[in-house]
Image 1 (cartoon, rainbow, N blue to C red):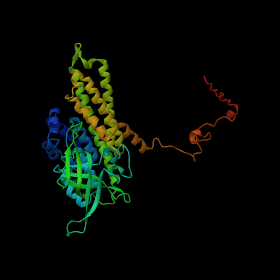
Image 2: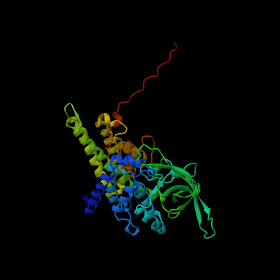
Image 3: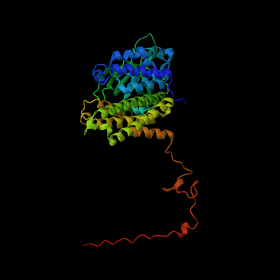
Image 4: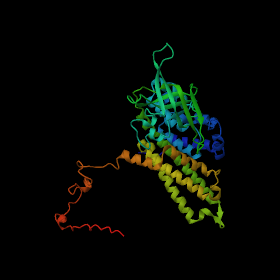
Length: 441
């Protein structure tokens, strides 16, 4: 494994940092999130034209740059530094891999080129607060119950006969709602996860819904982190196009997308944590108390040193996950924890001004809290990674015969010393004390 960055990767990082440094300061971020789209459309088009950012991980045959998900993660570390509000995560990290994996050749040829050039944005709509489960980040649901499971709620899909006589094909209609859809209010294309088949042929499928589809209602939600805009999607008998075929492995594709998205999110969180730490170091060098900079106090130095170690460890985990996406869940857990701790310490070390809700330090704190709510929490990310690795698998040598059955209770179990033969004979016997009599008073 060669951990060194290539010249092209260094150039992407340098150019992106230069553009965002000029166009995406804290004031610009606050102004962009309050627009109708929730992001700066002009900046989004500039990033698409100059760097091909939306299509950085799209194959060249579909109009993309042809790089890998590792390059996308590297770019997202820079967007995380600036807390860039953009549809990059929803489009490039969530929807593009699903279309590439499940779509037919006609669907890939029609959708991937405009997505790669930034002319079209997309959003993944999952019912309820189940995005982390759908992406297999905090658990796996082989039955797909998170999509509705045939019960009330979620999004349900049904087939209908073609409305015209020109074709004998059947169409699809969707009914239901999804309450937490990243960039769902502004996306031109929605990928909706819906349940179909009832109880007999229960399964989860993905459908394509255009922004102008009849019966589609979208409303932007008030959220903690405005740089991660979310929308509520209501589908009232909305016509939809099936992504791929009915026999496609949708759950497997979602899990694979979740591993890549976890790496991208980890890189984003590392970038944000690093920038929050850098801003805090700069502040403690300038802020004076008792006639000296507060950064010269040993207690402050120790706190900043601990943060630096934690951020660097999270960065190493994110880079490793970019090379091995199977480690994305663990890297995301470490990065989210580093961002949460760093943002909290940044507020504390900024003192009285840091506790004001309008201070820039709260932008990082809100990002940390919102990402953990959407894709975590951290302890569940780690628990699921441990389950996948089999760290807590129980080893048995035979059928259980009682409460104490198992390797630990078997004296002859391999790897355990056998008790001495006289142990049972010489063991003292204890007699239970006599029961006390109850005396009425």
